Length: 469
Image (cartoon, one colour):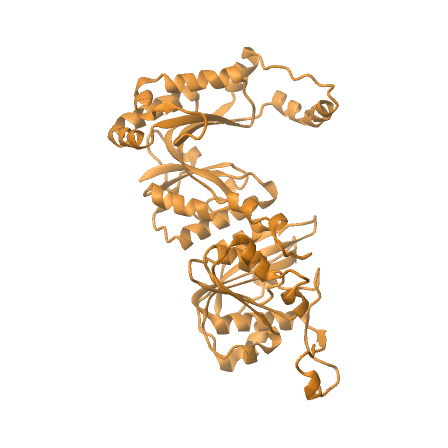
């Protein structure tokens, strides 16, 4: 098994989602053997391995790097390309506490794997090396010195090939992580003032002297030399951004969070996926991009038809070939809409809770018979939909139509103080997999709930299920 470096996109407000997404990608791609290597527990050449679990990775929420052990490059690539919170995955050649030891480890790795690496060099002859620092900045002179130390080492020179800075066939990176000292912390506090001065052209950038750089090198925590295997799925966040869509609404979910929901649902090619509160279809669009056939329900005919543009314009714009069906339907009447049992591989949704969109269902306070000539274009009246009743119908619908082992993934607005065993809606047919929190204000946010169907739906107990929600 080989060691790989996962480089996360650093987004402090969404850091906890990246561990959940990574775990879901592992499950979706059915990767059986993968372990993470805690750096602080390494003893000599021995590597302490741990399973990829949220509990064991909790200390990594604010860390940019994660070292894992996997079978091969193919599995690493498949896993990484699903994850929108990962920048890239790289094969580790050297990993140490200082730069010299890291290059020495890389030389040892090159000697041990010389035959394989020379074969790679014949297939892909050109390369370039990037130097990345986390926690501080180094001057160009130090960057050049580091690159020279790597490329002039004979064994590395033999397996690397020819330097090509523009569109090389292979990319290598030297990552250096630094600890902030008191003096550097003070400098960071002054960054805002410096940036403001730069905008006004009143600040002259001072080149870092050799003494300053050498002083910073004393605070190095880790140096890693690695070869890039694959980029993460962050490019699709730009391609499928809300800014590029012909049809969006005021409550359209961002591409980043939509892909997160789809990953949590473990959606694969040719799965059947449903969103009973489809809205403008952001989540279902992400599911289609992953190859699923989708169906969406919504009570508001205006959302489904659009105003000049609609869901099908988004599909045409991105040239997606998977099927999409839209139905005007009422979740309250789901038993009359669906006559078949377990048909969906996943159900994903962002239900209305009356926060930004009102929660309603078809109904009238008084009975009214619609004449036959008006029935075709008749828009039924609506009444308020009690939140607890809506969640009960939502869970019953999911339990009735999901296949065994299928996932139910939905967003739930909630306060910061939230006791999961007592406050989270529960249904006997589902087991809780994960709960992740996206804090929006000091007191409130929303939780992404991931559940899996583990027990069959019993029609005779449908009414009693309402009491458990």
